[in-house]
Image (tube, rainbow, N blue to C red; front, side):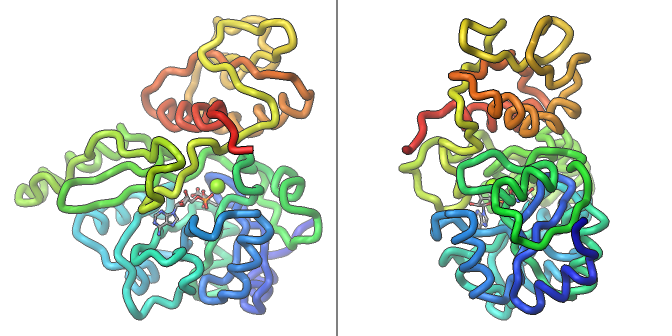
Length: 324
Ligand code: TXA
Ligand code: MG
C-alpha cells in the first residue's frame, strides 16, 4: 500500500527511514540533519562509511543554503533541476547536514529530484533529505518499489511511486577552474550537457575554460582515491557473471539483447534500439534475468552515445571482477 508524502515527511522528521521514489531510481531516504538516521542508512545498505550520500533538496534556494554555487553550477542547476543532475559543491559551514552524510569531505553532492512524491515530501519536510539508491551496497539499483523492498527488507516505510521513468542514476558533475568533470555518467547525457554549456559560453564569453567538459574522469578502480566520485569499479552487480558485447548466448548463458538484430534474446532492452527505453529497462531486466540463476548473462553491444554512455558504464561495473 505504502504511505503518503505527508506521512513520509513526519516519519523523516522523527528520524525514521523511508523508501522514496525518484525519477532515476528509488532512494533510501533519511533526514539529512539526523546523524542517527544516516548511520542507520549505512547499516541498512551495508555501505562503507567513506562513501558519501547525495543531499536531495526542494529547489535551488534550499540548495544555496547548503552548497557554494559558482556561476556554471548555478546555470546548470537552473537548466536541469528538478532532474537527474547532481552537483558537487563546496559545503557552506552553516549547512544543516550531518558530517556523517559527507564522509568527512568538505564538498556536498546536491540534487533536486523530478518526481511528484519526492518533491511533495521535500516540500512538507522543509529540509534536506539524504537518499542513496535503495539497494544493498554493490547491488543493482531498484527501479520499482518491489525491487527496493526486496533489497532492503519489507519493514521499512515506503512510498509507491510506480516505475522510475529514467531508470539510471543521476549524472554527477564537479565544476572547477579546470572545467567540468563528469564523475558519474547518468540519466542526463553528455550531449545535453554540452548543448547547455555552449549556450552558457555564448551568454558569458568571459567564462572561458570553466564552462567546458573535461575528458573522462570516472573513478577507474577501487584503489583510486574516493576524493569525489566514490564509485567502486565493481558495482551494480547481479549474481551472475556478465559477458559484454556478445552476439548471442553460449550454453548456460542468458542473452540480454538490444535493437532489432538481437533475435531470440531472453530479454531485449529496446527492440527498436531506443537508448532511453534501454536505460529505463536496464536494472529491472538484469534483475529479472539474474533471478533465473544463469552462470552468465551475455549482453549485446550498446552504442556509446547519449544514454548509452551511462548504460555502458553500469554494464562495465557490473562485469568487473567482484571484491568478494
Ligand atoms: O539518481 C540518483 O542519484 C539516486 C537517487 C536516489 O537520487 N541516488 C544515488 O545515490 O544514486 P548513491 O548513493 O547510490 O550514489 C551517489 C554517488 C556515490 O557514488 C557517492 O560516492 C557520490 O554520489 N557522492 C555523494 N556525495 C558525494 C560528495 N560529497 N563528493 C563526491 N561524491 C559524492
Ligand atoms: Mg547507488
